[in-house]
Image (cartoon, rainbow, N blue to C red):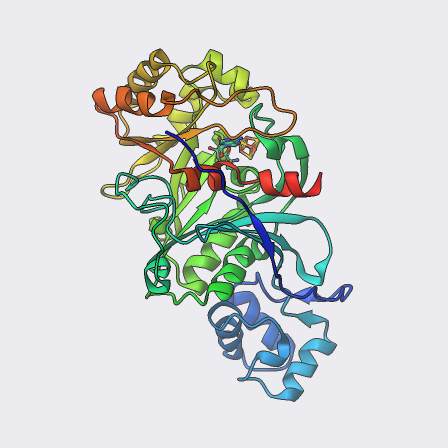
Length: 398
Ligand code: SAH
Ligand code: SF4
């Protein structure tokens, strides 16, 4: 499969919010905590609901935009040290096909940025994970605004950098810097929804937690963000996919989450066996493939739900037809409903691997398909964006 290079063009961004020092962000608090804030202000608890509406539905960015509050109440909140504090988009890079990548900054304009991505058509996958990627859509097709709105995917980050150290990943090169808070994770989504004027309920939107970082090493904040997105923003967990490198304690906790707030799961398999996987993903020495699968088996899947195996093809290292046959055997052995998403490796500075040779990805897919394993190839767009989540920041800032 050939990929058309995407030229990212930097365009406008939201104005930098001045650093307001130690103000406490309201954004990121759940309904109960917002009600408690109102009570603390000497207001009835039901006013917390108005805050929920303003923050998560109306997407306000300033206290003065909360029209259901009197000026006096807004000033009282400010005097008590509260601000909206939603993360803002600091830089935007727009590709020719409408895909946008953002560097998102915490409230106050301080601190490191993280990367989020908006893809008007997803990557061809219904859930942004390749599940419908056999539905052809022309790369050059000019989507109308309505059509492009009807199916979009937002890719969000969960940490600044990552501690997992996968050998092929650019985010790994940043090292682990810090966890994002629930507000910083959910805030990426709400900032992007606001930018595109997305109407919940009308537009079909998928969220993938496949940006920078390992969500299951920031479990509490990640799940708190998911609950905000489901309960307050109004998104469906069945349209969310979280990707993990295979953090077993995290997967076990995830298995205990109620179906109403549990996203779908993707495992970054990336290799046909433990030996190769340990080489490209050193985390495999701690949690080998079987240990990961045992944890995955604890999840009570919804009807028709599948576990996704993500598989990055590294030239010669993991992309040979015999690797595909081994992945097919592995997939069958799991006895789980799985599908495989194939991603050609995206190169980056300082990483020694090579891209798979032309035709290798399709060949790999065909071997899997012949063995009865549903397999999808991420479109170039998806490949450039999802797989490259974390690459933008690195390439811009170094
Ligand atoms: N930390 C999580 C989620 C973020 S990485 C995880 O590893 O699953 C999201 C996906 O991008 C993973 O499947 C990862 O294997 C893949 N990826 C990372 N670097 C890549 C690269 N340079 N090219 C292609 N895919 C890459
Ligand atoms: Fe971290 Fe995922 Fe990159 Fe591995 S692939 S280093 S887990 S972000």
